[in-house]
Length: 198
Image (cartoon, rainbow, N blue to C red; front, side, top):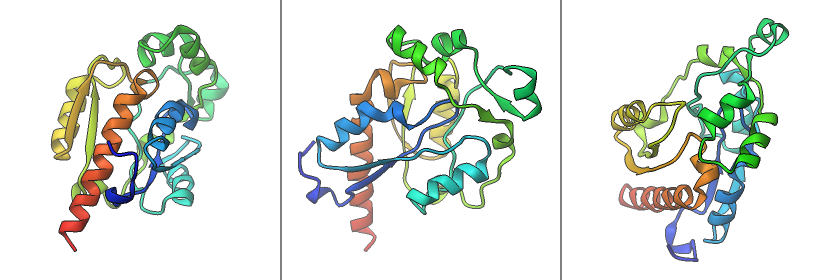
């Protein structure tokens, strides 16, 4: 990829985290994209409900309508369950969510996870961006949270450009260069499509 983003058209990127984590997991992807001249913003939203998340993301990027996919979770204590909040057990994070992440980093991810609101499952989207806009999808072939075949189904339904790599649900942490490469391809592809439709 070119070190200059001037020819790319798309210069500003917004990275959105999913459930149980915050934006800090994007750090290495952020640095990889910045080294190629992109302006990168990472959202920090509460993952408690779709409406709350949408509101937080819209402060950064008004066009974001969708919530990233989230995996299964284990109820924590009864107080969390009463608040309709889920957290994953630390051993589950390391085994299922971040299986290919360095053990110390996976332990940190487990201990610093954000609670995820059950209400997020009931959220509705008025406009699904993937129905009207091009999309790119990275299938993590070793994902234990969202089965790879489910990822392939979703990406096919969205008519996404797909790249598959070995990796866990936390592939953005374990393989930031592969993720950054796909994002760069998406930025270039989106700019090319925008130019053709003018």
